[in-house]
Length: 317
Image (cartoon, rainbow, N blue to C red; front, side, top):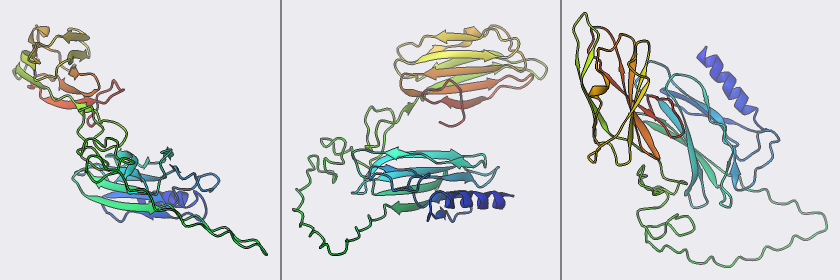
């Protein structure tokens, strides 16, 4: 069945715009196929402007359960090979995910598009598609072609910080640690890799807990404490399920980024409820520690997160 679906998808990609072809990644741990004409409009087949591309294709994990999720990263590259814009599409559930997206990097010309298909354990495969050369104009009969003037030599590139990247592509030519391809440090307020903005950092606080429980009783909180929260963070404790002692409580952190949650839970917690401890900070990915209460079982914590712009905890951010 998967082979039939894969063949249908490849066929759909071949129909994007004549004479399009589809490239399929030759790996066993993932399915990845991309259209070989990202520089053409998918409807008319016309060549897009020099600052625009339209990558199309699909990516899927090989199957579940397995060790790792997969991710397809699409990067628009400039005439010097610098990264102008990138985005990624992930799958860890063996579900086909579309990578279709129109990109415009005006005023920068896009010379090629790179597709990086990677597994979360570091295995990767790469495919790059270069912009096709513009066709030469057909001379009219009896008309001599206009000679092309010899262009003047280009001005020498200016690289003020000496990092090997001229100011035309370096988003901070006064800092030699900032340039296209540099390691991005999330949450430091700097666009280290010149990809268009700083990546959000993650809240790395700790939630410590201790419980009292026997084989025939519901658990009771003996200790619950937040530690090492960043300055300016806030702590919200959410309870869901029948018999919750409250729906939401907010706690204030002290100067050391600590607060005790123990006194919020004065009685044993009923079987079936869920406790979420959410630690959030402005412009950062929130940390969520979840406890699912079961009778006679010492609750273990599950680490989750909430990405920027969302209110829903998830396993990966």
